[in-house]
Image 1 (spheres, rainbow, N blue to C red):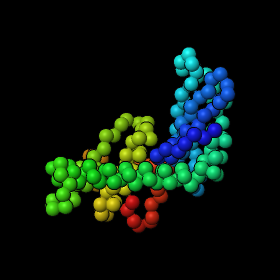
Image 2: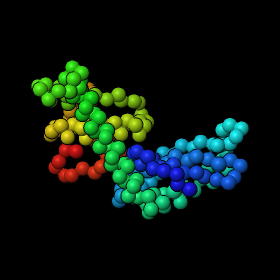
Image 3: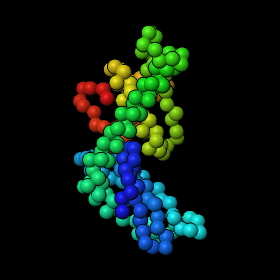
Length: 193
C-alpha cells in the first residue's frame, strides 16, 4: 500500500498491514538505462509494539516487484518529477553556496564575480575510499551540473584540477557511474552537462 512520494524519487509503503508486525518501507527509485525505474535503496522500520523486529521473513514478505511495477506504471510521472525537482534544487543550492562564498557571505548583484574562483570552490569534493556510496556519485553529478550551468566548457577537468586528480579520465568514470546509477541525466554529445 503506497503512502506517499518524497523528494528525490523516494516512495513510502506499508508492508504487512493487518499482520502483527507491519513494516514501513521507504524505497528510492532511480531511472536506469532505457528509462525504467528501479529500486536503488530500501529502508525498513518495524512497527512492532515491542520494538524493532526485522527478520528474514520480513524481508521475504516485502513485495519489491509490485513496488517497481507501481513505480513504472501508476506512480511513474510523479516519481520522475520528484527526481528531476531534487536534481534542480541541488544544482541551485550548489551555485548559491559558491556565490555566497565568493561574495563574502552576501549575494548581491553588484559583487564582481570571479568565475574561476567560484568554479574552483564549487568543484572541491570529499572523495571517500572505494567502494564509493551513492551520495558521492550524487555529489559528483551535482557539482558537474553546477559547473556546466555556470558556463564551464570543461566541468570534468575543473573537478580534476580542484581535487588534485592527475587524470580527467578518473572524473569521467565518476560521471559515467553517476549516470549509470540514475543520479545524473544522460549528456548530449559535444555538450557539457
